[in-house]
Image (tube, rainbow, N blue to C red; front, side, top):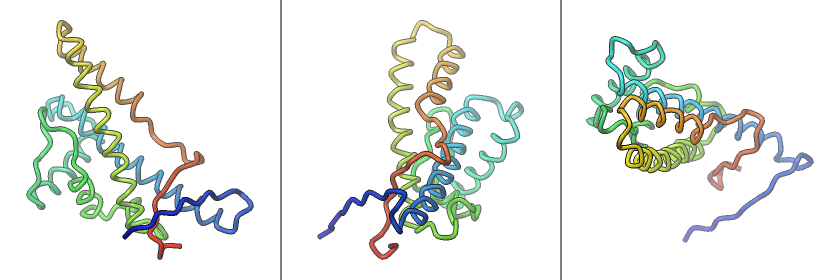
Length: 171
């Protein structure tokens, strides 16, 4: 049976520096995952000829990982990256955020799962927005959805407090 123990660490605690380091690395990983997801969302709505350099690089990473691991390639109908595909992208590209020294793998996976969970909420929001705005043009709805993504899915601030999960042997 699993046992979960919450620990609150304050500036005077001996674990503070370690926790601060781990949360910064987890925030960086969450931002990297969010960067890839946002670029996929915007890229699938455009023709490849007009993709930005970031969108092109991200779509190349995601497409090659999807093909290598027999996952679905993102398109206009299926543009939310699954946790498993996102995990494979980070592993295949040897992401420095995912493989950061001192960041336990379990914590890294949990950070990716948190971003994916936030994307599920965004998915519901975008579906509601599309239903409400049926009479608007498709381009306007897309702009509304993209603006909503920026509001609902902000990048983490590096010095902000964060919550991380660590395995018991990680301490």
